Structures are given as structure tokens and as C-alpha cells.
Amino acid sequence: MRTVLRGILRSDTYEVIGEARNGAVALDMIDRLRPEVVFLDVMMPEMDGLEALQAIKLAQPETIVIMVTGKPSVDNVQESIQHGAAGFIVKPFNAGKVLATLAQALASARRTVTS
Image 1: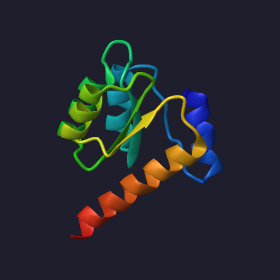
Image 2: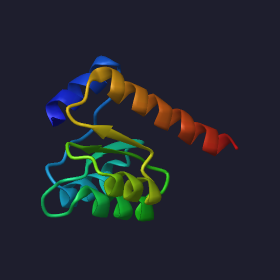
Image 3: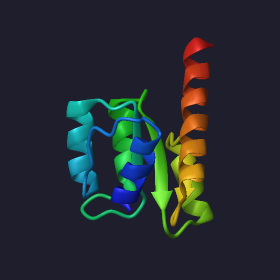
């Protein structure tokens, strides 16, 4: 799924600066690379996406985090939003949904900055 997501983003001129196989590696990369946007799977080994989301928002609250899951639940969506996720994408996803969610999250973040 990371390969598909990378392809969707690059085809729309977004720059992909890193990928991580688990939440712990993701936190390290985010700390070093300081991306504007992070796509984070809810289910990951070592540290799940909800734990990683909380750590990201604590360390870098300006980072836009979009959660990804293959098994959506009301609890996961609510917890993600409560902890600062800017969007939620359900697998299998398509380019239109990914790009629309990303555009909405970026627009919302920019409105917040200028307010």
C-alpha cells in the first residue's frame, strides 16, 4: 500500500521524502525530516498509528497527519480526530480519495495558520 500511495502522490507532483515500516521508525524519520504531511496507518508493528499520531502531535503539532486503515471503526476515527488527525482514508483507496483528503487537510491547515 505504501507503493500505491507513493505513486499517487508523486503522480500529482507531491514530493515523498520518506517511508517507514512501523510507528517507531516513522517517529524517528518525522523528527529528522520534518515533513508537512504524514500518512499514517492505524495498524503498524511496534507502535500502532494511534500511538504514533499522539507522539507526532505532541512533538510537532503543526504536522498534518492523515490516518489510513483497512479496518475502519467509529472508535478509530473518533480517536484519530480527537488526537489531531486531519483526515482519514480507508483502504483500498483510490487516487481521487487520497488527493481530495490531502487537499482538504492542506486547505484546513492553511486556514488555521492565517486565522
